[in-house]
Length: 110
Image (cartoon, rainbow, N blue to C red; front, side, top):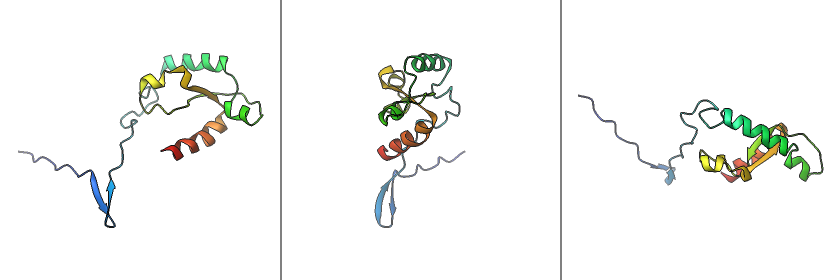
């Protein structure tokens, strides 16, 4: 007969202080872009958005004109498919802005 494993407590003591167990990412177990929602339907919607909004919004704010190639979510959807498909939550970015500024913003907001 197999023994049941004991669940680890959600709170632990670190240097005499309580710490909360890390939050599990919504991406766990979703190893492909398709599993995360970036499927054929997304690719088609992305192309329409980029056609309608061809310039990087971050570069425009700084007075530069740069072609966008990425559609990003203004508010990270974190697996919420309603927010994922909310077109008012989409913005066009160039690759450098998406890779640097936007990632930095999300890291700061937690």
